[in-house]
Image (cartoon, rainbow, N blue to C red; front, side):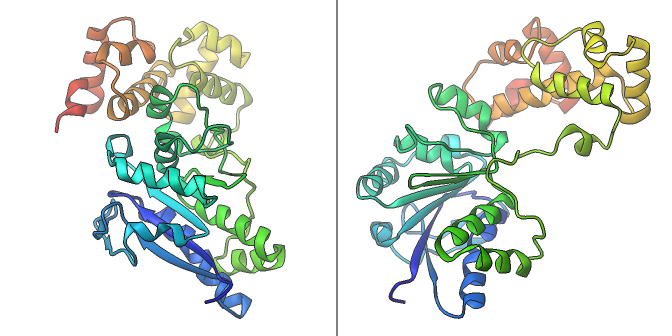
Length: 314
C-alpha cells in the first residue's frame, strides 16, 4: 500500500448512494487497469457508527473519525437534509484537516458542510443545483459556480449524481495521466469525458424535447425570472412571437398553457425554499413571485395537495 493515494469518504446520514458509488468506483478501476494499487479508500462517519444512505443501505466505517488525518483527500458525501446536520466536532475536524494541508472534497450537498466549516472561503466550488436556495440563504457571501465540478487548490467539489465520475476521472488524469483516465471512462462506458465547467442541468432543448427557438427563449427566460415573473406579453416579446402563437406552442409541445408552466416552475422553486431554508411562508411567496401569501397557499395546496407549512412538519 506504500505510495497509494488514500481517499477517505466521510458519509453523512442520508447521503446519496449514486454519487458515492460514482466517486469510489473509478478508483477501483484505476487500480485494476493501471496494474497496481494506485489508490486506496477508507470510510468514515461523524460518530464512528454505520451510516445509512438515502435508500436505506448502511455502510460501516473502516476507521474511527480521529483517523481522517491519514487521508490525502477526504470527500464529504451528503445529500437531502444536510442543512439540518449539526455536529460541531465534525466541523472542527474539517477545519483541522484544512490547516494541516489535507485536500478536501465534497459531492452533492457535501459542499454545504465544507462551507459550514469555513474551508471554502476564497475557493471556486460547486454543489447540486437543488441545494442552491438553502445555500444562498445561509452563505450569502459564497457563490457556487453551477458547474459539474471544480478543482481549486486542494478543494474538489462536485454537483452530485454521475458528475462524481467526471470529477474522479479528472483527478486520475492529473495524477496518472489522461491515458489511464480515458481507460477508466471506457471501462464504465462513459463515452463523453465532461469538463468541470460543463453545466449541471440539461439545456431546455433537451430537457423539454423542443426545438423551436422562440419557445426555447421563453422557457429559458421563465427559469431566470422566478422572483419577478414576466407577463405573458413580455414572454411573447422575448420569443419574438405573438402571444397567440406562443400559447399554441406551449399547448402543442408541452401539453399545457404558458401560465400553467410558469406557475409550476415557481411552485417547485417554492417547495425547495420551504424544505431547505428558514424563510417564512410569506418570504417564500415573495421570493417566488406571488403577490400575497394567501394566493401562494391556495396555489400550493392545489399543486401539491397540502399547504406550504406542511413541508416543514416533522
